[in-house]
Amino acid sequence: MNRPWRQVLALGTALGGVAWAAEQATRWAGLGTVRRARSAQPGVGLLLRGGPDPQVTPALLDALQAAGATATFLFDEAAARAHPALVQQAGREGHTVLPLVGPGPWTGPWALARQVRVARHDFAALLGTPPTLFAPGPGVSRVAATLAGRWSGLTPVVGQPSGAWGGPLRGRRPGALLERSGTDPAALHLPPLLADLQARGYEVRGLDGLRGVRPENWRDLPATALQAVDVLYDRVGGIHRIGGHASSLFRVGAAPYPLADVTVPHPALPEGLTIRHGERLTEFHLDSARLVELAERPVAGRRIVTHSIRDLAATVRDDPECRARPAVFSISIFADVLALYGFTVLDLPPAHRRRLTWWSRTLRRAYGVSDPEKAHVPRLAVIARDELIRRHTTQRGHPLFKD
Image (cartoon, rainbow, N blue to C red; front, side):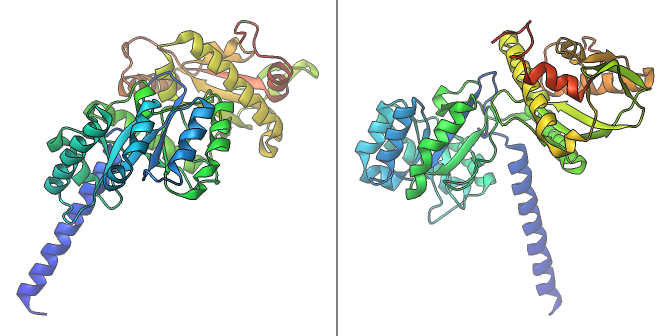
């Protein structure tokens, strides 16, 4: 290969690498896109992609109406023109209806922006109100969708693929936008999925019914980075979420007890249970992002903590690995709250406390807490496994926080 061709190949490879890096960075940051809701509401958004389909869409509408739920229909422009009555029915029944745009013959941002503007006009004619959001179609790069949104005045919506109909639901968390096919005949599995979500305390809503829906911006990047750190930390440490309910706040793993030996109450030991330094115990971690959201509703937050404690008690009772660990502990600024649930609360060594106080302040800044400089001192809360089970699986929760 002669030198000019090598230079062309090298330039092409470099440009391809830059494009790939830009796409990955845009997907991670999500700037200018709607990809979740942020509020204390225990809501999840159900995004149904494709259609309207005369065989599937009526069944979806019936199932949603029977469950008292709403969804977001991402309708293809051509199918919407072919079946306008279904588009209008979805709008009348309170669902959010958005255009699903691209890719067309030309997939660049300018061409996509033109498609979005045309779709806005067409959907405004069908629904009487122009949409403010759109969903990029399969094959549209995130960079192109973000730029097209900026140039067209509509914000792109990006959901979480949550598995096939009839399979386990992935990504279930308050505020999540869960996306599934709206044209697959297997969508007849929607009624049991809705029943499961509602039984677990979730409100299934379209984007118009979710509070805290807004595009990601630069101020969200620190929180996004911290959540990525949490994901990595959980994978490395074998930590997993427990409960599976809208009120579930805890992640559980195993760790050595870090303080000096301590004796805590135990239902079968009059002298209490002695926990040794370095002994392997069950450690639980709190969902920082969710706790910040719950700060706006303290009464609901207390109820959710109570439910999460019950989840924790059930986990240490039923999980074979947890059964072998005699106690449960957590280190956080919420340790004093855990004292209300029977935990013994202990001070940390000064160096440990200073380090975690700094980290707590960093978390609060990242999640936009209004008083990041206020002193919140981390402490350790510990309880015997059997005492936790006695208190929170044989009773209906703590007497201070009745349902």
